[in-house]
Length: 81
Image (cartoon, rainbow, N blue to C red; front, side, top):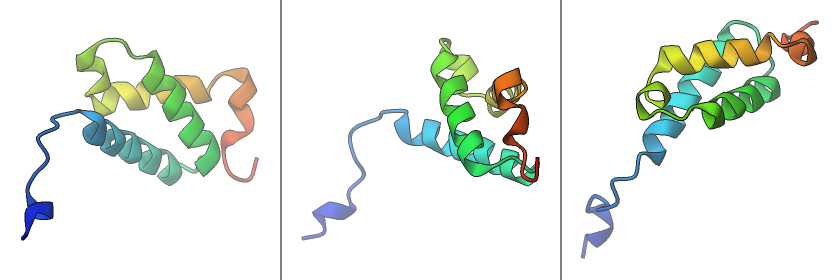
């Protein structure tokens, strides 16, 4: 009857990774970055992470994303620039 309430048996880390990426995007928006540029940079930075420990760290992903955004092609990513 309430089968849909049962937790999933799939223990994939995908939801946690998406939550982590959403947190980093939120931090970037609070710093004044454009949403599209932030989402693209987070995706690129997350794809570049190969170690499981690095991808699970907010600080590591934020640092990698900020490095991605500081590249010359992304200099105008802040709102109002």
